[in-house]
Length: 220
Length: 192
Image (cartoon, rainbow over all chains, first blue to last red; front, side):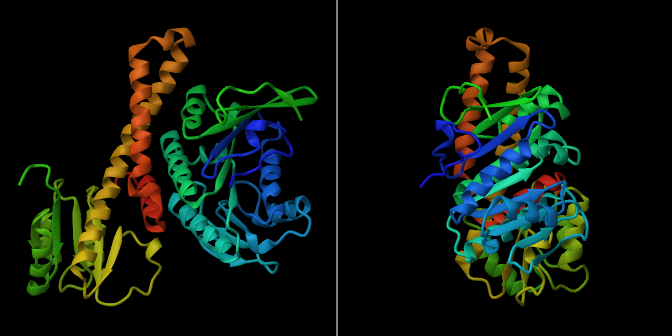
C-alpha cells in the first residue's frame, strides 16, 4: 500500500507516498503550513486511517473541533492527540466521542511525548486502523524548548518508529524562526519536503526529495 | 578477553543467584560481581556497559543505586531485577529494562544483548549528527559546483549514507516500544 497525500496539493510525487516516509512542511509565518498538514491528515481519516496529532500550540479540544470540521462523520476512535502544552502534567483520557488525548508536561519532554505516541498508535490499532498519519505542529515551538541536536535526533528516532509502524509523518517548521544552519540540519532528518512560499495574496508550494528532482511551484 | 569485551556488573545479594548469572554470561562478557548496593557503586566506573541490579537488597536498594548511577553521569545501561511483576508503569521509570525472577538463561542473555545494541544505536546517532552538522556547514559555505568535486563533502555524504543504513538495521529500526522510549529518554538526558 501507499499513502495518497494529494488533495490540497496535486503533485504526482504526493500521490503514492511510501509508508514510513517523513515529510517536512516548511515555509514562512502565516503561509498555511498547519492548514496544509491537517488537510493531508484529514485525507487519511476520510479513508478510515488513524490520525495522530502532536500539538505544541492549540489545546487538544481546539484541535479536535477543527478536525471534526475537516472530516465528515469522523470516527474519533481513530484519532489521537498528544497535547504538549504542559497543562495538567502527564496524563491521558478518552473524550466522550472516543478520541484518545495524552497530555505531556512540555514540548521538551521527549520521554513523555514518546509514551503518548506509543499509546496513540496502540489505541488506533486497537480501533482497527491498519495505517495512519502523524502530524507534528510545530517543530519551531519544540525548538524553543530543545537545542537543534536534540530536535534533529528526536525527528530521526520518530522517523524510524514510523517506518516500523508503516505510518507517514508530517512535521511543520517556520523557516523564518530559525537560522539557516538549523533549517539545513533539521531537513536532513526527513525523506522529503513540501516547501511553501507566500507572496502577497498567493501561496505556492513545491515538493523536494520524495521523487528525485524538485517539482515546479504550484499555486494553491 | 580483549579490551573490547563488554563489561557486565551483577549487583545481587544472593550469592547462588549471582553465580548462576555469571555462569550464563561469562563466555561472552567480562563479568564483575557485587553483593550489595554499596559494593556495586564501588565496582562501577566508565568501563561498565550493563548493570544487572537487584531491586530488593539490604543496605542501598536498587532504586538508590540507580539514582547514584544517573547522578554520576555513567553511560551504562541498567536492567532492574525484581521478585515481583512491577506495579508501576515501567515506561515511566528510569531503568532501561526489567527482569522478573526467576530469570531464564536466554532471557538474561537477550536482555544484555538488547541493552548493548541500544548503546551502539546511541553511538551511531551521535556520529550521524556530527556529520549532519558538517554537511549543512559545507552546503552553506560552497556552491553546488564546488561541492560536486569537494572530497570532504563527498566523503561526508558517503559516510552519512552508511550510517543511515547501520541505524535502520540496529534495534530492528526501533521496532519495540521499549527501545523507542529508552532512546528518547537518552535524548532527554544526554548524561544519563
